[in-house]
Length: 149
Image 1 (cartoon, rainbow, N blue to C red):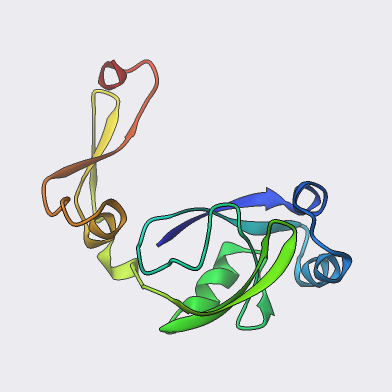
Image 2 (cartoon, one colour):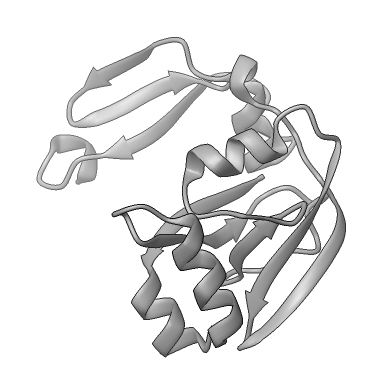
């Protein structure tokens, strides 16, 4: 899958070169949380069409400004068409595969010595590769804790 993070719309306009047409579309689709979605990293080999720093503008022709919109538009879809801002250019990418992980996620975690541990779920296997089939996955470590040392 891909990891999504948010950037303020102003940053995307000025730093990444979003044109006026897409700026107007994004503002029209937003409420007081004027933000857009950015692709930070990709983990699955099947998502070869998306790159780090691609800004997702629309999915199947609908503007995307919130993660809830993203989930609504990809839910129950095997493939979607995504319009992205890449290197200052607007690009339409067709046949992007989707994968639903909501039923494959973590059901419990353990906190010990400043680290958060969980079982290796199917979603984590996809993200980390086939070698991570079972065992414990350390999902975070807190600064200053014994686990960090």
